[in-house]
Figure (spheres, rainbow, N blue to C red):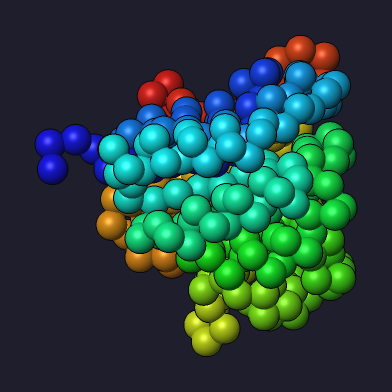
Amino acid sequence: MNHPPLVLTVAGSDSGGGAGIQADLKTMLALGVHGMSVLTAVTAQNSLGVQGAWELPADAVRAQYRAVVDDIGVHAVKTGMLASAELVETVAELLAATDAPIVVDPVGVSKHGDPLLAASALDSVRKKLLPTATVATPNLDEVAQLTGVRVESEADLVRAAGAVLELGPRWALIKGGHLAGEAVDLLTDGSEEHWLRAPRLDNRHTHGTGCTLASAIASYLALGLSVPEAAQAAKTYVTGAIAAGFPLGEGIGPVDHGWRFRGV
């Protein structure tokens, strides 16, 4: 192979550049893989929130995916905003026929609390999308949406992970960043547990953390790391990106995907 590993993101666009496809591609570039994209939706978005969102037709999503995978190939896939049941089911069908690790970030709401997934799509995420995942990376709000389990303490992460694993992914990474204390995540396949810890950073500019983490895991899997190794390396990368997050606009600024290049 005379090119870097190939990683495909299937997600929505963030016009402000902090999350979504834009964050995914920046992360992939920073980690030394070739990023490719299937656009599922366009959002009008900035540091204050999402002002509008328009999903693409399923045929357009399918055509983008087939164009990339059939000609170029792929070593890992990451999914983000899929918006509707039709798009969830379209993407799940494509993923099921793809021989590569798949990281599913079951995006439900934006950093600002704006809904990015129709309520009618939740059942499709549970039954169609999550069973395709090598790793699923829900945050605590998404865990509650998908399983009904509400996490209030670190001890609850084990129960949350079990509930997510029952929906079919091989590994569940439950992101506990909204809990008090350390920024702790739990990665488990039901038999082994990996607790990923980092100090809580005093920086409000964290837009794009979820997209960045999932894209980093996909990138490291494409580079040949195991799931636990990829998750730990991704945690280290996103912690540095949060530390270097910067103000942009009047609200919450983005994490800095290029922090390693700036010596932060």
